[in-house]
Length: 265
Image (cartoon, rainbow, N blue to C red; front, side, top):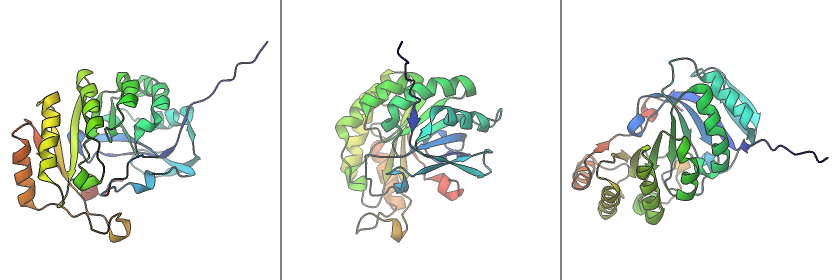
């Protein structure tokens, strides 16, 4: 008689904590954040470069919002993560769970196992924050998601060119009936032609999809990845670009990274 080996799913994580969402459609709401390690993009403006590789340990908050972290070895097992999220889920406190990173979809196989269980024990909606460039992995986890915030990377601002992947990704989101919206980081270096291309990309899927223009939060000199600093756009640029995009998309909102202003993680 052979003994069947049971493999416990694991994920490389950076941290799990409770905070206020600072971006996009859910701005201002309270979420349990699960920050995954690893990212295959290298955006020039990235303020989470520490997630590009996996740390040896993951920090997990014991009490929501208290920053009383405990440390666990990476990778973290599914039962430990599930218990940690369940412990933070004080009744009526949180509006949803945020999967963030890094790029959460690099852990799609783990999420397929984890998400049905975390939904069952918390009854919280699940929100995915993603670079919007991995449609094949998105298809695996879409049945377990309630909303998706898709970053659309402008080459002039991010250094990444992902038009084809973004198009497939957004089509998948919209056709699945999952709530979705698009975030676009803009800087003083943003090319308006790329914003027009972005607006056309979104409108061809649906002009009803909300778009959030997010003026970049400049990085400290020690954190910059390019010789030319990524600077915030001027008010005149933002007003002009919002008007440009509204020719194609109905909802174009300008929302900065409010969690930076609130000094949230």
